[in-house]
Length: 297
Image 1 (cartoon, rainbow, N blue to C red):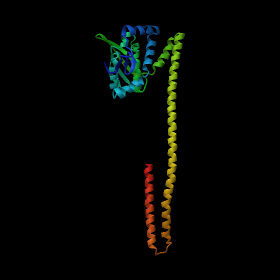
Image 2 (tube, rainbow, N blue to C red):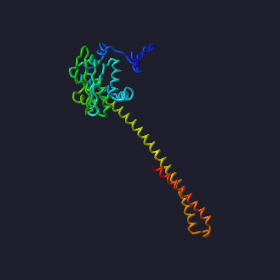
Image 3 (cartoon, rainbow, N blue to C red):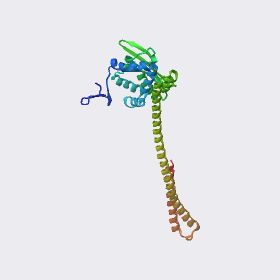
Image 4 (cartoon, rainbow, N blue to C red):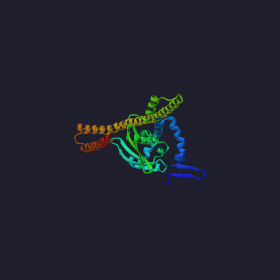
């Protein structure tokens, strides 16, 4: 058994990647659970509802694929498919991924959803897997994508589903809303759908508020950094102003004494000392200017 499965004999708990799991027979267990739901809701509504719910959380799936399972989407998606195949999802094969045209194709051997329910309308098959792939490729390509079954091949004893991925102007949620407007639902179904919409909008609002709080905190931090930098600049200017004035005053003072021969025409030794002071002050001033130019780089 792969190491991502665990079994706790004391608590009788099955784990899959550390998450509590349960095993079902595809038939009759899952079929008994899901077929009445499909027949009650109708294929189109069931497909969109399951696909929409399956697309949630796929940002984390995509991040895992390109950071932990592989260095690129194609490699990570294939390894992800190999892992979920051990859970009975069916064996996924990546046929093509094209970032330029925003398209892709995968083939799934013996997908579990076809055992539960297979419809003649190809686009209404495999809602769970198509929802997952729609979400994953939406995050990968940076635009709304839809995964749809375009063919089902019976190869040997197992069916193979061909799934194409293409850009879409409509999201799964918007298609659900359009289906409700077009076909209509009972009062209870409308209430259930309205409650679902309200929960989705509430979650979106909570995420937006969280991002706003982060942005506000970042703005406060940047403002404080700017204020501290401005204060440091003011202190530096004040300090450098004093440092520049001192050697300049010495240069001006000593050069004035030499020019006017304050101590008489024969005081060469004293004038020579003042010339040395002028040279030293000029050298110090040059160093200060060099430091300023270095700071300005």
